[in-house]
Every structure is written in C-alpha cells, then in structure tokens.
Image (cartoon, rainbow, N blue to C red; front, side):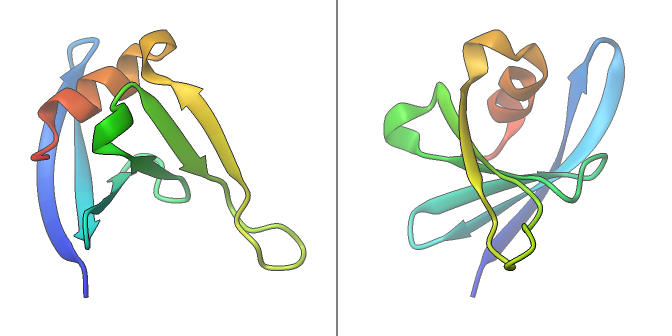
Length: 83
C-alpha cells in the first residue's frame, strides 16, 4: 500500500498540483498536469530522476533518466514535495 501526499508547487508564476507516492522508501512523483508520467525519486541521488514512460506495445513501462539540474520545473516540484 502506498502513502499518498498531495501538495502544490509554483513554477513560472503558475501553481501546479502533484501527488507523492511513497512505498518502502521508494518515491514516485505524479504531476496532475502530466498524469501519464511517473517521476521516480531516489533520495540518495536527488538530482537524478527516472521517468517511467507510458507503456509500450508489450505493456512494459520504459525508464528514462534525466538530471533535475537541466529541468527547473522538476526542481521546483521536488523542492516542494514532502520528502
């Protein structure tokens, strides 16, 4: 079972809603404006995000890694998340 924490964050003078899912030390950030993407956060590497993309034809969700340093939107979301 996941612990769910809803919160809001600001970016470029706009307010966004998001949910942080936590289960056994694993964190997933779901931004309401992009519900089809799951941003996975590792507290040991907070500036590296793994993005679970929508499923492929075989039903698997490919993962892509990216740095939060190059994405101010994600940096703002993570800073506001109740980690």
